[in-house]
Amino acid sequence: MKWYSNDSQIAWVCNALIEGKSISHADEFHAVNGWRLASIIHNLKKRYKWPIFTSYGESRIAYYRLGIVEPDKLEKPRSFKKWEAAATAPHSEPEPCKNQPSGK
Image: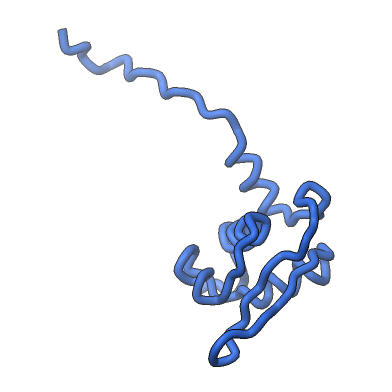
């Protein structure tokens, strides 16, 4: 069992906030099987200076959202930068397998 947030959890949280979503622990758990949302939010606020706001719903469930900011101006964690680069990289068509019969 891991006792820290993995790269996909951090990247998902960053992306969800940048997309303007209000997210809770349940959202993170269902999306990436994560359970460290408060820790990720804390690091984004303190270490990376993201303007994240917290509101509380029923049963004191915390919901996090990003304040008004230009996403390009945010300092981003390394794991999000890797995810962002992979998501925006051009994808090429796979080459056909040379060992397969052509079907003619």
